[in-house]
Amino acid sequence: MTRARSFRASEQAFAPGEAIRACDHPDCAGAGEHRAPKSRDRLTDYFWFCLDHVRAYNKAWDYFQGLGPEAIEASIRRDTVWERPTWPLGSWRIEGGKDQLDAALARAFGVGPNGTIRPVRHPQWQLLSAHEREALALLDLEPPVTLQDVKLRYKGLVKKLHPDATGNDANAEERLKRINAAYERLKHCPHL
Image: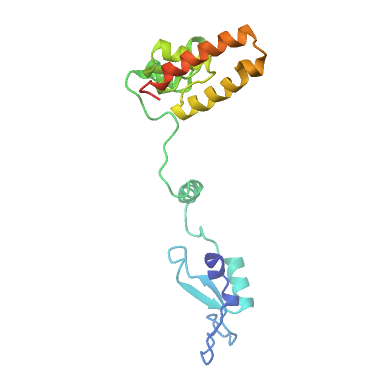
């Protein structure tokens, strides 16, 4: 808000008793209430004009006056990237060439041979033993997982598979035994 207001000189309030600035245009006795930059190199140094003269000045002012086509193009390019450094796409290199880059991108984005998509495993997956992974699968969980997540899933499955809830269903009872064993294994896992 303050930046937008700083360019509205017509709304500028003069202090009581302060002399009103005269228009910088020769032979004009009007009040200089509107500012206009003096040049491309001095954008914060202003002429102060009355409304008619600032309109005429703005209509005639050319920011690129005196610059050649190459300088104008360079200025436009700098402005398109907010005067930040840039480089052409693909100009950076990786050791090992294209094959190394392809392999690194495939690992990072989970792409297998021939462009097939493979699931990217969380780093916690490699820390778990085969038995711990199997226990997680029984609880329908995948890393990243915490012990709190395991406890919540275990409690939910116990309520769902409890003999009182299933009517003494033998399959549910067998699954509940496997879930109890999986929970006991995961309860002591150091990687959760």
